[in-house]
Image (cartoon, rainbow, N blue to C red; front, side):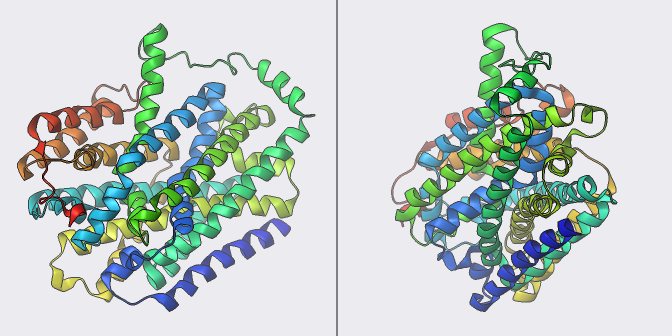
Length: 474
């Protein structure tokens, strides 16, 4: 009873915050999708990191770490380092280009970066966004269902419906501003929940010495690198780390994350936004990795069931009911903070990049959002997929499609529309071939070749951009 009560109170607070944002809504497309580019740095940073973390962190990463052990630390190190490298030269220039082009979607800003329209590229990009963003949203909604299953033992489809309904309520009310406001509250809940579980988990095993002793008792659990590397020895280790570094760099190809930085009130505040983002991200990821490893000691037999249930099941093992509700709310916060971002980004791709401009009315903006949420819900309840695998698939494909072109633009290179289309198709094809054709994705993140191949192609086909042709300099 106390679990359900604390869980319900926290979720009600999220929805109330999102609905309150409607008071600032103007109804314009720029306000609905970019909050009129008026968001302060702290909210941008917290919203971006909450969107990035998602149910993937609470469900997917915890499950991956449960099975992998200490070697999962490279996922954290590579991811954050790759993310940081990309942010040093891309985020601010993307924000400037968004203001100069006065566009409301990620694809449109890239299409008009150098003053051209790139209509064919923009249409193809929008289709890819809709497909993979909605699939990604489906994974988030499914993560909410798994959380309820782990705590209450009920049908995971009920949790999926709950996530979809709450996201629908405040997304329709306030657009991206509602998403950002709730993200900030959700990021605090996520951090508190993970900290409480980490501290309680260590205390329940007799302190740090007891924890380390338990880990040593699990064969290979404290090995620094996994056994199934793509190459033996140092070369395989290097590719393993490099793969996760590219996974972090892939953030720049995620429309739902990058749109947060496009909402910043002033590009000169980007350093402050990044400070909020990386401070939170580093601390939270470290806690998540620690909790994932602790869960192996509390739930040694979970591998035969579903390792992605490790966090909610562990919470019931070590916490009183009221705090179990907090953990469950933290998981739901993570899923909702990303799900709303994904459906809004896919909605923008439909109404702004695919449909005729005359259809871009307030009603159509909300209708497209509602349809995207509905499709994500259908995907979430249709099949019991691994959240970790589905997120990585969507993440790598989006990154392979957009990160190479954005990286070229950020270093002041330009390409023709045909070259941009070739880069996009090549990136997506290589990533999908790596996963489904060669089956090497378990040994090396498919986003590495998916980004590297079209990037090299783009370098060969590009030319230096003049200050006159750059939208960001306008």
